[in-house]
Length: 283
Image (tube, rainbow, N blue to C red; front, top):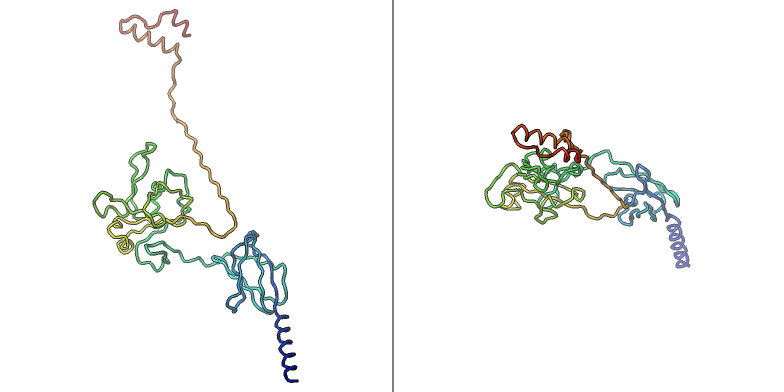
């Protein structure tokens, strides 16, 4: 009899627990109403068992009654929703965080928070680099403190600026700054500004110590963009230039030229260059 009662109590407890399990489905959007993929969804104070929104911003998760669902994404305020029943079309809108993210800079051994970096490092906003110009080197002058940029010619093909970080620190075959693109030495003229994820300039000895003598004249670290799990984005950019001469000379016609040529030769005591018949033909 005791075993029978114990079995009934266990069955009732499991049925009650099953009754408390709820299924919640819905869609997460951003401030503009667009679907928001990649948002982390989990039950508050319950480790594990979370999920993330798919490419259409949709999610499905099982929680217990009276649980609080937390919606989290970098750069956005956390949203919390209390669950008391099954939800099949829960709508959650994310709001941009009012507190700015800590600015990070790229250093020799990874990334650091700018506030905790003691070396002289300048991070350039990639939006400042996406302007019409011949190449990135021509845009560094005036945008990065301590960078000296000189353009020696305006001739097409030779109008690429040379730049130095805080002057020339050593003499030798190569006195320019060390440029590393994704960890490999490269040339800034060969990279598209639209492909740049981060752009940092290391300017002092403490920041460039990891690079040895090659970093004596400064180091430029460029990280290119990588594929991310997000909704598809297509960006188009077009540049056009209208060139015209502001001062064009007034050219003579062939008949006026022939008359002046004859006049010049007659003044010098020579025979006219064109005869009357030739002048009539030209006219």
